[in-house]
Length: 101
Image (cartoon, rainbow, N blue to C red; front, side, top):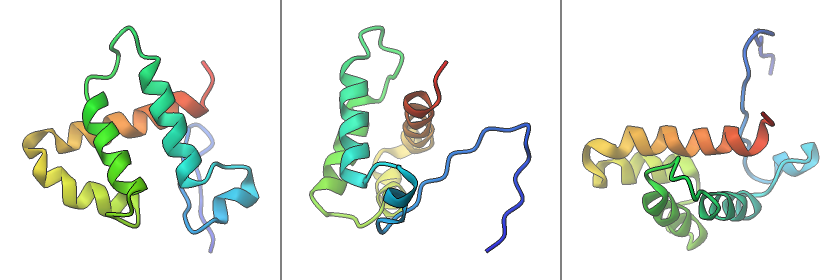
């Protein structure tokens, strides 16, 4: 597979099925724990969907869904018109965790 990436943009790749471990990326459980700990430390309330994100992470940890994409696809509907905002916040948190200021 060949991918062209612009050098003036930052990208986040999320791989599954253990392939990320070879590249020093966290497993899903490790990422879930990082996100959970990160949002617990958000005393400034930068993130407004912490509770919903926690619920989504729990569903994934409980194996209700196999992937974050499947969870987002199915659960966004249940969160009515907030689904897109919650998704964006999840990926913002990923960015904030892995990209140092």
